[in-house]
Every structure is written in structure tokens, then in C-alpha cells.
Image (cartoon, rainbow, N blue to C red; front, side, top):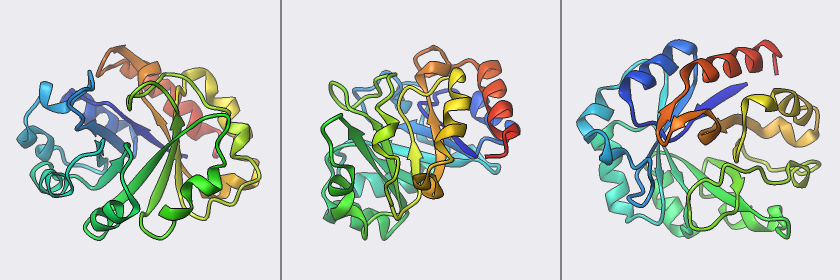
Length: 214
């Protein structure tokens, strides 16, 4: 099972994630976020990060040309679009870099209908919890809504995942929808403060998750 740790602001902690075998780290390029990366480090410091870890840039309704410039300035490997981006805008970005489209899920959503216009224009999906604004909520949406669906594209499972959820993730992987489950995405439940991670907590989570051989 792959792991993405989002909302990173400390480059030493990113290096530690790489040493743990975490596959993805997320940097938030949304100025209204408490974890906005440029409040903490310049683009040159993000670009210096090497290793096996994949750098993901998280954007919310940003200008397409600005996104593509930051991809180069920061050496990003993937882009995550977390706003109300149109399929056309997503397609332009995904023609340049591997692109994840995030969807914020409510109890009333028809998920297959929600994603249908993006099936052919992005590389991956991410399912998160609907909240006020565009930031993370630290809460889970109802994973049962995904069960039995054929997503037809690799997806990240996000939204309030904590260290207590290893067994729930294991159970989720027994459903047919999990054939497309690409990675879990963690953030606020593993923080000491906004953007500062509890590295021991993350390490234990990663060890337990990967030990289950999901």
C-alpha cells in the first residue's frame, strides 16, 4: 500500500519520509491554507528535494500557466487539483504532468456521475471529505459509498485518516473498488501543528500499513 503525506512544510521531514519509504509528499500551493508552502520555504528549497519520494503540488483553482511554471520551479512530479477545475483545464495540465483530480464527497453524491467528465482527461482521482472552503476537514467521508464501484482509474483515499484506521483500510481493500486504490493520503491526524508532522506517528502507521501486505 502506497502512502502520501500531504501538507508538508519542513524539508528535513520530507527527507525522513523518503527514508521511511513513503511514496508521495504533498506541498500545498493554496495561499489561504495554513500549510501554504511559500509561508515556510522558497521554491528553490522544494526543488532541492531528491530521492525516491514523489513531490505532489496541490492547487486550488489556480491559473494553468502559473501551475505549469511552479511544476518546473519546484521540480514537482505530480499535480493535484483540489478546486473546481474544469475538465478542459485539467486536460491542459495533464498533457504536461501526471495529474490527480480531487473530489470532495458528500452523502448525497453520485460518485460515478461526479467523476465521469474527468475520466479521460486526468491520470488519477482523489476522494476527500466535503467541508467549508477547499481545505482538509480532518474528517472521513462514508467509504461505503465507494464500495462496489468501478472507478476505472487509480485513486487516492483521503479525508481524516488516522493511525487507528489500518484495519479499516485493510477491510476496504477486500471490496472490488479497491482494485483501483492506488494510495492512502494522510495529513492533519499526524500533525503536532499545521504543517509540522509527528514523524514517529507516521512511521508507526506506515509500518503497520505495509506489514498487512495490502
